[in-house]
Length: 170
Length: 366
Image (tube, rainbow over all chains, first blue to last red):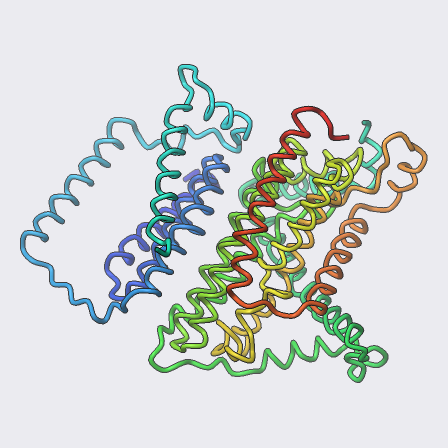
């Protein structure tokens, strides 16, 4: 038994994430579901921090936990309450759910068996410098990301213009 | 500039000595765990003590602005024991459980609030070598952590099952999300100026002059915009319309009692302190003493004052500025608040960002 501190933290976070993921889809109240989703996203951010990728961890917290979940909660607050929705799960949906679960489990097991459990290869405590990430994002070299970066920028601009058009008073 | 003279007061040697001493008697993992627990207790204790100090200061400053005396009965001269007595009183209050409300979310919301606040609080640069969370993206993490408080406010408002709390929560949520933009853009401009996003790096980049003086007029305007946006983020001052008591009783925490209400109250005061602390980090040099490039004798004298004194001095000065604003201006309406942010403050902060980049690129900063 030689478990490092990093592994212990990883297991705790992983178990919490699994529990909250299941609770997200099984709870009846839609706002509780959003709250459990928030905890899953916290867990994801914690995993990034364990990996030393602090930038992605902070962005995960800012965009998902502070942005997307707030958006969810806002839209839940401003629309009908969930008591008026009566969902029945029919047979075809059940089959689809089962197929998705089996496919997902197969994918995860395939990844683990072909690559091994990757936790031990993680370099401990090495942060990626912000400068490196920035240069990679706007470089047009072989491993540069300038094209996806610009594409996402244009997509966001289109979303903003669409949002303004919908909200505009005529 | 040579910064080795700042090492008189650095507590780095002590902390690494403690770490080595612990490691020599136990495995490293256990040592790190114990250190984390001790630091956590220290943070929470400091959080509570600072809240008491800030509440006392708020009551005295408010009284001074309204030509009153303020608390003066409990605990001898100056009413020093008034706030500790209030704390004891709030600890004995009953925590009410609501009927027909989501009790899980109702109980969870204050903890979300206080968690976001403590996460941001533990990033403050107290002293050289005494920073608790220091990452290379430090200031970004602070923005991320403080944006979590909105979820707590929204959940508190919804789960109380009350129209007033709901309106208060939606107002407050809309305001916090809006002012986060200006705050983020200003922080980005200061990252450009100091060329790093790590909090210790930002402080050390100000060894030859504080950012407020390095960035000409742009930095001074940025400081003003930061104070306005930060004041709104802390839900205070003219922006406390979430708890406009004439219309909304007490906003999103109307239904809370006892310690749960205490958590909201605590988070509000500590958010004020955090806003002020990061204002002093970004613009006034954190724990860095006042240095003027060229005046070496003056700089050496300033270095004899420990960093923690500088940090608390600057932070409480900014806290006092924010209290002055709060007790001077009247409360805004929600439409005024949102129009002010989206039509004036955010374009201004975008302009500040562009100007700061231009200044930096052409080397016009000091």
